[in-house]
Image 1 (spheres, helix red, strand yellow):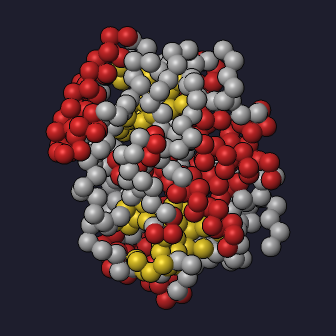
Image 2 (cartoon, chains in turn yellow, cyan):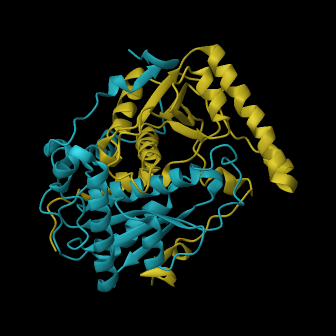
Length: 218
Length: 218
Protein backbone atom coordinates (compact mmCIF):
# COMPACT_ATOMS: atom_id res chain seq x y z
CA UNK A 1 0.00 0.00 0.00
CA UNK A 2 1.04 3.61 -0.44
CA UNK A 3 2.28 5.20 2.75
CA UNK A 4 2.35 8.96 3.17
CA UNK A 5 4.16 8.66 6.48
CA UNK A 6 7.23 7.01 5.01
CA UNK A 7 10.39 9.10 4.98
CA UNK A 8 12.32 9.75 1.77
CA UNK A 9 14.82 7.15 0.62
CA UNK A 10 17.71 9.41 1.67
CA UNK A 11 16.24 9.94 5.13
CA UNK A 12 15.67 6.22 5.63
CA UNK A 13 19.21 5.50 4.50
CA UNK A 14 20.56 7.99 7.07
CA UNK A 15 18.69 6.28 9.88
CA UNK A 16 19.79 2.80 8.84
CA UNK A 17 23.33 4.14 8.48
CA UNK A 18 23.45 5.44 12.06
CA UNK A 19 22.01 2.17 13.38
CA UNK A 20 24.59 0.14 11.45
CA UNK A 21 27.61 2.34 12.21
CA UNK A 22 27.02 2.93 15.93
CA UNK A 23 29.74 1.29 17.99
CA UNK A 24 30.43 0.77 21.67
CA UNK A 25 33.62 2.84 21.76
CA UNK A 26 36.52 2.55 24.19
CA UNK A 27 39.11 4.66 22.35
CA UNK A 28 38.72 8.43 22.40
CA UNK A 29 40.53 11.62 21.50
CA UNK A 30 40.68 14.22 24.24
CA UNK A 31 39.18 17.06 22.17
CA UNK A 32 36.18 18.73 23.79
CA UNK A 33 32.61 18.16 22.64
CA UNK A 34 30.79 21.22 21.31
CA UNK A 35 28.29 22.24 24.06
CA UNK A 36 25.60 22.94 21.44
CA UNK A 37 25.96 19.40 20.08
CA UNK A 38 25.86 17.96 23.60
CA UNK A 39 22.59 19.76 24.16
CA UNK A 40 21.11 18.23 20.98
CA UNK A 41 22.12 14.80 22.27
CA UNK A 42 20.38 15.32 25.60
CA UNK A 43 17.23 16.50 23.81
CA UNK A 44 17.35 13.34 21.68
CA UNK A 45 17.71 11.19 24.81
CA UNK A 46 14.80 12.99 26.45
CA UNK A 47 12.56 12.19 23.46
CA UNK A 48 12.75 8.48 24.23
CA UNK A 49 9.66 6.41 24.96
CA UNK A 50 8.96 5.66 28.60
CA UNK A 51 6.53 3.37 30.37
CA UNK A 52 3.43 5.37 31.35
CA UNK A 53 5.43 8.44 30.29
CA UNK A 54 7.28 8.31 33.61
CA UNK A 55 10.55 9.56 32.07
CA UNK A 56 12.67 7.82 34.71
CA UNK A 57 16.01 8.84 33.21
CA UNK A 58 18.42 11.17 34.96
CA UNK A 59 21.71 12.30 33.46
CA UNK A 60 24.69 13.62 35.37
CA UNK A 61 27.39 15.44 33.46
CA UNK A 62 30.77 15.01 35.14
CA UNK A 63 33.25 17.84 34.65
CA UNK A 64 35.01 17.61 37.99
CA UNK A 65 38.35 15.92 37.36
CA UNK A 66 38.49 14.41 40.85
CA UNK A 67 35.17 12.67 40.29
CA UNK A 68 36.36 11.49 36.89
CA UNK A 69 39.42 9.91 38.48
CA UNK A 70 37.33 8.34 41.21
CA UNK A 71 35.04 6.84 38.59
CA UNK A 72 37.96 5.44 36.63
CA UNK A 73 39.17 3.84 39.87
CA UNK A 74 35.75 2.31 40.55
CA UNK A 75 35.72 0.75 37.09
CA UNK A 76 39.23 -0.54 37.50
CA UNK A 77 38.28 -2.25 40.75
CA UNK A 78 35.25 -3.90 39.20
CA UNK A 79 37.30 -4.91 36.18
CA UNK A 80 39.55 -6.97 38.43
CA UNK A 81 36.60 -8.53 40.24
CA UNK A 82 35.02 -9.41 36.91
CA UNK A 83 38.27 -10.99 35.72
CA UNK A 84 38.29 -13.16 38.86
CA UNK A 85 34.66 -14.15 38.28
CA UNK A 86 35.45 -15.08 34.67
CA UNK A 87 37.89 -17.76 35.79
CA UNK A 88 40.01 -19.06 32.93
CA UNK A 89 38.89 -16.25 30.58
CA UNK A 90 39.91 -13.63 33.15
CA UNK A 91 43.37 -13.13 31.70
CA UNK A 92 42.05 -12.56 28.19
CA UNK A 93 39.44 -10.19 29.61
CA UNK A 94 42.14 -8.14 31.37
CA UNK A 95 43.79 -7.48 27.99
CA UNK A 96 40.64 -5.82 26.62
CA UNK A 97 40.19 -2.08 26.80
CA UNK A 98 36.86 -1.78 28.60
CA UNK A 99 36.49 1.97 29.07
CA UNK A 100 37.78 5.36 27.96
CA UNK A 101 36.94 7.34 31.09
CA UNK A 102 40.23 9.21 31.32
CA UNK A 103 40.31 10.22 27.64
CA UNK A 104 36.76 10.97 26.51
CA UNK A 105 35.69 14.59 26.00
CA UNK A 106 32.50 14.22 28.01
CA UNK A 107 31.76 11.87 30.85
CA UNK A 108 28.12 11.20 31.73
CA UNK A 109 26.21 8.99 34.10
CA UNK A 110 22.73 7.75 33.24
CA UNK A 111 20.56 6.65 36.12
CA UNK A 112 17.11 5.61 37.20
CA UNK A 113 15.31 8.24 39.25
CA UNK A 114 14.28 7.74 42.84
CA UNK A 115 10.61 7.62 43.80
CA UNK A 116 9.48 5.20 41.10
CA UNK A 117 7.03 3.16 43.18
CA UNK A 118 4.05 5.36 42.38
CA UNK A 119 4.36 4.56 38.66
CA UNK A 120 2.18 1.47 38.24
CA UNK A 121 1.05 1.92 34.60
CA UNK A 122 2.84 -0.75 32.54
CA UNK A 123 4.93 -1.82 35.54
CA UNK A 124 2.65 -3.82 37.81
CA UNK A 125 3.92 -7.14 36.44
CA UNK A 126 7.10 -5.80 34.79
CA UNK A 127 8.65 -3.27 37.20
CA UNK A 128 11.87 -3.32 35.19
CA UNK A 129 10.19 -1.36 32.37
CA UNK A 130 11.64 1.81 33.92
CA UNK A 131 15.12 0.48 33.17
CA UNK A 132 14.04 -0.29 29.60
CA UNK A 133 12.99 3.36 29.22
CA UNK A 134 16.39 4.60 30.35
CA UNK A 135 18.05 2.22 27.88
CA UNK A 136 15.91 3.63 25.05
CA UNK A 137 17.01 7.14 26.03
CA UNK A 138 20.65 6.04 25.96
CA UNK A 139 20.17 4.43 22.55
CA UNK A 140 18.69 7.69 21.20
CA UNK A 141 21.70 9.57 22.53
CA UNK A 142 24.04 6.99 21.05
CA UNK A 143 22.56 7.15 17.55
CA UNK A 144 22.46 10.94 17.56
CA UNK A 145 26.08 11.00 18.73
CA UNK A 146 27.09 8.72 15.85
CA UNK A 147 25.41 11.08 13.39
CA UNK A 148 27.35 13.95 14.99
CA UNK A 149 30.55 11.98 14.44
CA UNK A 150 31.01 11.32 18.15
CA UNK A 151 31.72 7.97 19.71
CA UNK A 152 30.09 6.65 22.85
CA UNK A 153 30.79 3.74 25.15
CA UNK A 154 28.43 2.30 27.75
CA UNK A 155 30.43 1.11 30.75
CA UNK A 156 28.61 -1.09 33.30
CA UNK A 157 31.68 -2.31 35.16
CA UNK A 158 31.17 -0.56 38.50
CA UNK A 159 29.65 -1.07 41.92
CA UNK A 160 26.36 0.86 41.67
CA UNK A 161 26.29 1.63 45.39
CA UNK A 162 29.78 3.13 45.32
CA UNK A 163 29.00 5.22 42.24
CA UNK A 164 25.70 6.40 43.74
CA UNK A 165 27.57 7.55 46.83
CA UNK A 166 30.20 9.37 44.79
CA UNK A 167 27.49 11.36 42.99
CA UNK A 168 25.32 12.00 46.04
CA UNK A 169 22.44 10.03 44.55
CA UNK A 170 19.32 9.63 46.71
CA UNK A 171 17.95 6.33 48.04
CA UNK A 172 15.91 4.54 45.41
CA UNK A 173 17.85 5.94 42.47
CA UNK A 174 20.31 3.66 40.66
CA UNK A 175 23.16 4.39 38.25
CA UNK A 176 22.96 2.23 35.12
CA UNK A 177 25.66 3.55 32.84
CA UNK A 178 28.90 5.43 32.78
CA UNK A 179 28.81 6.96 29.32
CA UNK A 180 32.09 7.93 27.70
CA UNK A 181 31.34 10.36 24.88
CA UNK A 182 33.70 12.13 22.57
CA UNK A 183 35.67 12.51 19.41
CA UNK A 184 37.38 9.42 18.07
CA UNK A 185 40.19 8.82 15.60
CA UNK A 186 38.04 6.20 13.88
CA UNK A 187 35.02 4.07 14.54
CA UNK A 188 35.56 0.33 14.82
CA UNK A 189 34.43 -1.30 11.55
CA UNK A 190 32.94 -4.17 13.60
CA UNK A 191 32.16 -4.54 17.33
CA UNK A 192 35.44 -4.35 19.24
CA UNK A 193 34.72 -7.62 21.07
CA UNK A 194 34.53 -9.35 17.68
CA UNK A 195 37.68 -7.67 16.41
CA UNK A 196 39.51 -8.71 19.57
CA UNK A 197 38.30 -12.30 19.27
CA UNK A 198 36.40 -12.21 22.57
CA UNK A 199 33.20 -13.50 21.02
CA UNK A 200 31.31 -13.93 17.76
CA UNK A 201 28.03 -12.44 16.67
CA UNK A 202 24.98 -14.67 16.47
CA UNK A 203 23.09 -14.70 13.17
CA UNK A 204 19.72 -12.95 13.29
CA UNK A 205 17.82 -15.96 11.99
CA UNK A 206 18.72 -17.93 15.12
CA UNK A 207 17.11 -15.29 17.34
CA UNK A 208 13.91 -14.86 15.37
CA UNK A 209 11.01 -17.25 15.87
CA UNK A 210 7.54 -17.79 14.41
CA UNK A 211 4.52 -18.15 16.71
CA UNK A 212 6.40 -20.19 19.29
CA UNK A 213 9.90 -20.18 20.72
CA UNK A 214 12.41 -22.18 18.68
CA UNK A 215 10.19 -22.37 15.61
CA UNK A 216 12.27 -20.74 12.86
CA UNK A 217 10.90 -17.73 10.97
CA UNK A 218 11.57 -18.13 7.24
CA UNK B 1 37.30 20.98 15.81
CA UNK B 2 36.67 19.58 12.35
CA UNK B 3 35.11 16.16 12.39
CA UNK B 4 35.31 13.88 9.36
CA UNK B 5 33.00 11.35 10.99
CA UNK B 6 30.05 13.73 11.18
CA UNK B 7 27.13 12.94 8.90
CA UNK B 8 25.79 15.53 6.45
CA UNK B 9 23.28 18.07 7.70
CA UNK B 10 20.48 16.27 5.84
CA UNK B 11 21.43 12.92 7.36
CA UNK B 12 21.60 14.36 10.86
CA UNK B 13 18.22 16.01 10.36
CA UNK B 14 16.70 12.68 9.31
CA UNK B 15 17.95 10.97 12.47
CA UNK B 16 16.73 13.75 14.75
CA UNK B 17 13.41 13.69 12.88
CA UNK B 18 12.86 9.98 13.53
CA UNK B 19 13.79 10.42 17.20
CA UNK B 20 11.36 13.34 17.57
CA UNK B 21 8.48 11.82 15.60
CA UNK B 22 8.56 8.28 17.04
CA UNK B 23 5.40 7.63 19.07
CA UNK B 24 4.09 4.83 21.24
CA UNK B 25 1.12 3.97 19.02
CA UNK B 26 -2.13 2.30 20.03
CA UNK B 27 -4.21 3.00 16.92
CA UNK B 28 -3.50 0.99 13.77
CA UNK B 29 -4.87 0.25 10.35
CA UNK B 30 -5.23 -3.41 9.47
CA UNK B 31 -3.17 -3.27 6.26
CA UNK B 32 -0.31 -5.76 6.14
CA UNK B 33 3.33 -4.81 6.61
CA UNK B 34 5.59 -5.42 3.60
CA UNK B 35 7.72 -8.50 4.50
CA UNK B 36 10.84 -6.88 3.00
CA UNK B 37 10.37 -3.86 5.28
CA UNK B 38 9.81 -6.11 8.28
CA UNK B 39 13.10 -7.80 7.54
CA UNK B 40 14.90 -4.43 7.48
CA UNK B 41 13.41 -3.67 10.89
CA UNK B 42 14.66 -6.94 12.38
CA UNK B 43 18.13 -6.29 10.97
CA UNK B 44 18.07 -2.84 12.60
CA UNK B 45 17.04 -4.36 15.93
CA UNK B 46 19.80 -6.93 15.68
CA UNK B 47 22.40 -4.17 15.20
CA UNK B 48 21.78 -2.89 18.72
CA UNK B 49 24.53 -2.73 21.32
CA UNK B 50 24.58 -5.48 23.92
CA UNK B 51 26.48 -6.02 27.12
CA UNK B 52 29.55 -8.16 26.40
CA UNK B 53 28.01 -8.67 22.93
CA UNK B 54 25.69 -11.28 24.43
CA UNK B 55 22.79 -10.32 22.08
CA UNK B 56 20.17 -11.48 24.57
CA UNK B 57 17.19 -10.44 22.40
CA UNK B 58 14.76 -12.92 20.92
CA UNK B 59 11.85 -11.93 18.69
CA UNK B 60 8.74 -13.99 18.06
CA UNK B 61 6.54 -13.06 15.12
CA UNK B 62 2.93 -13.98 15.81
CA UNK B 63 0.80 -14.79 12.76
CA UNK B 64 -1.46 -17.39 14.34
CA UNK B 65 -4.82 -15.67 14.96
CA UNK B 66 -5.64 -17.86 17.97
CA UNK B 67 -2.43 -16.76 19.67
CA UNK B 68 -3.16 -13.15 18.79
CA UNK B 69 -6.56 -13.42 20.47
CA UNK B 70 -5.06 -15.11 23.50
CA UNK B 71 -2.52 -12.29 23.82
CA UNK B 72 -5.24 -9.65 23.59
CA UNK B 73 -7.06 -11.47 26.38
CA UNK B 74 -3.93 -11.57 28.55
CA UNK B 75 -3.51 -7.83 28.15
CA UNK B 76 -7.14 -7.18 28.90
CA UNK B 77 -6.87 -9.14 32.14
CA UNK B 78 -3.78 -7.25 33.24
CA UNK B 79 -5.43 -3.98 32.25
CA UNK B 80 -8.17 -4.62 34.79
CA UNK B 81 -5.69 -5.61 37.49
CA UNK B 82 -3.69 -2.46 36.81
CA UNK B 83 -6.86 -0.36 37.04
CA UNK B 84 -7.54 -1.89 40.45
CA UNK B 85 -3.99 -1.21 41.58
CA UNK B 86 -4.26 2.41 40.43
CA UNK B 87 -7.07 3.06 42.91
CA UNK B 88 -8.85 6.34 42.26
CA UNK B 89 -7.13 6.79 38.85
CA UNK B 90 -8.31 3.35 37.75
CA UNK B 91 -11.45 4.62 36.06
CA UNK B 92 -9.55 7.20 34.02
CA UNK B 93 -6.99 4.53 33.12
CA UNK B 94 -9.73 2.21 31.82
CA UNK B 95 -10.76 4.89 29.33
CA UNK B 96 -7.29 4.93 27.72
CA UNK B 97 -6.55 2.79 24.70
CA UNK B 98 -3.52 0.82 25.87
CA UNK B 99 -2.90 -1.56 22.97
CA UNK B 100 -3.70 -2.24 19.32
CA UNK B 101 -3.19 -6.02 19.35
CA UNK B 102 -6.29 -6.90 17.35
CA UNK B 103 -5.70 -4.26 14.64
CA UNK B 104 -1.98 -4.01 14.00
CA UNK B 105 -0.53 -5.54 10.82
CA UNK B 106 2.27 -7.34 12.64
CA UNK B 107 2.35 -8.61 16.19
CA UNK B 108 5.73 -9.34 17.75
CA UNK B 109 7.06 -10.37 21.13
CA UNK B 110 10.48 -9.30 22.30
CA UNK B 111 12.07 -11.37 25.02
CA UNK B 112 15.19 -12.07 26.99
CA UNK B 113 16.89 -15.34 26.06
CA UNK B 114 17.28 -18.21 28.45
CA UNK B 115 20.74 -19.29 29.59
CA UNK B 116 22.07 -15.84 30.49
CA UNK B 117 23.96 -16.78 33.65
CA UNK B 118 27.22 -17.49 31.83
CA UNK B 119 27.43 -13.89 30.60
CA UNK B 120 29.37 -12.13 33.34
CA UNK B 121 31.09 -9.38 31.33
CA UNK B 122 29.41 -6.09 32.30
CA UNK B 123 26.79 -7.90 34.38
CA UNK B 124 28.50 -8.99 37.57
CA UNK B 125 27.16 -6.00 39.51
CA UNK B 126 24.41 -5.01 37.05
CA UNK B 127 22.74 -8.22 35.87
CA UNK B 128 19.88 -6.20 34.40
CA UNK B 129 22.14 -4.97 31.60
CA UNK B 130 20.75 -7.79 29.43
CA UNK B 131 17.35 -6.15 29.64
CA UNK B 132 18.89 -2.81 28.68
CA UNK B 133 20.31 -4.48 25.55
CA UNK B 134 16.89 -5.77 24.51
CA UNK B 135 15.44 -2.29 25.06
CA UNK B 136 18.10 -0.80 22.77
CA UNK B 137 17.17 -3.35 20.09
CA UNK B 138 13.52 -2.41 20.42
CA UNK B 139 14.38 1.28 20.16
CA UNK B 140 16.33 0.60 16.94
CA UNK B 141 13.34 -1.24 15.53
CA UNK B 142 11.03 1.59 16.63
CA UNK B 143 13.05 4.35 14.97
CA UNK B 144 13.47 2.37 11.76
CA UNK B 145 9.73 1.66 11.74
CA UNK B 146 8.98 5.36 12.09
CA UNK B 147 11.23 6.10 9.11
CA UNK B 148 9.33 3.43 7.15
CA UNK B 149 6.10 5.20 8.05
CA UNK B 150 5.00 2.42 10.40
CA UNK B 151 3.77 2.89 13.93
CA UNK B 152 4.77 0.74 16.87
CA UNK B 153 3.46 0.38 20.39
CA UNK B 154 5.24 -1.33 23.29
CA UNK B 155 2.71 -3.07 25.50
CA UNK B 156 3.92 -4.24 28.91
CA UNK B 157 0.49 -4.94 30.42
CA UNK B 158 0.64 -8.73 30.69
CA UNK B 159 1.55 -11.52 33.06
CA UNK B 160 5.00 -12.58 31.81
CA UNK B 161 4.54 -16.18 33.03
CA UNK B 162 1.26 -16.59 31.18
CA UNK B 163 2.69 -15.11 27.98
CA UNK B 164 5.80 -17.29 28.24
CA UNK B 165 3.58 -20.35 28.52
CA UNK B 166 1.47 -19.33 25.52
CA UNK B 167 4.59 -19.05 23.36
CA UNK B 168 6.32 -22.19 24.69
CA UNK B 169 9.20 -20.14 26.06
CA UNK B 170 11.90 -22.05 27.98
CA UNK B 171 12.74 -21.60 31.66
CA UNK B 172 15.01 -18.62 32.18
CA UNK B 173 13.69 -16.66 29.21
CA UNK B 174 11.35 -13.73 29.87
CA UNK B 175 8.98 -11.80 27.59
CA UNK B 176 9.47 -8.03 27.89
CA UNK B 177 7.29 -6.53 25.21
CA UNK B 178 4.29 -7.18 23.08
CA UNK B 179 5.05 -5.02 20.06
CA UNK B 180 2.16 -3.85 17.91
CA UNK B 181 3.54 -2.78 14.54
CA UNK B 182 1.73 -1.53 11.51
CA UNK B 183 0.33 1.14 9.30
CA UNK B 184 -1.43 4.03 10.99
CA UNK B 185 -3.86 6.69 9.81
CA UNK B 186 -1.70 9.32 11.51
CA UNK B 187 0.99 9.59 14.13
CA UNK B 188 0.07 11.35 17.38
CA UNK B 189 1.55 14.87 17.28
CA UNK B 190 2.44 14.48 21.00
CA UNK B 191 2.60 11.43 23.29
CA UNK B 192 -0.90 9.98 23.59
CA UNK B 193 -0.78 10.06 27.38
CA UNK B 194 -0.21 13.83 27.21
CA UNK B 195 -2.97 14.31 24.63
CA UNK B 196 -5.36 12.33 26.82
CA UNK B 197 -4.43 14.34 29.91
CA UNK B 198 -3.07 11.32 31.79
CA UNK B 199 0.21 13.03 32.62
CA UNK B 200 2.53 15.86 31.65
CA UNK B 201 6.07 15.72 30.34
CA UNK B 202 8.90 16.77 32.62
CA UNK B 203 11.26 19.43 31.29
CA UNK B 204 14.72 18.13 30.38
CA UNK B 205 16.52 20.64 32.60
CA UNK B 206 14.97 19.06 35.71
CA UNK B 207 16.45 15.67 34.82
CA UNK B 208 19.93 16.83 33.97
CA UNK B 209 22.51 17.38 36.69
CA UNK B 210 26.08 18.58 36.96
CA UNK B 211 28.68 16.54 38.88
CA UNK B 212 26.25 15.57 41.64
CA UNK B 213 22.58 14.66 41.78
CA UNK B 214 20.25 17.66 42.09
CA UNK B 215 22.89 20.17 41.06
CA UNK B 216 21.42 21.85 37.97
CA UNK B 217 23.32 21.78 34.66
CA UNK B 218 23.18 25.21 33.02
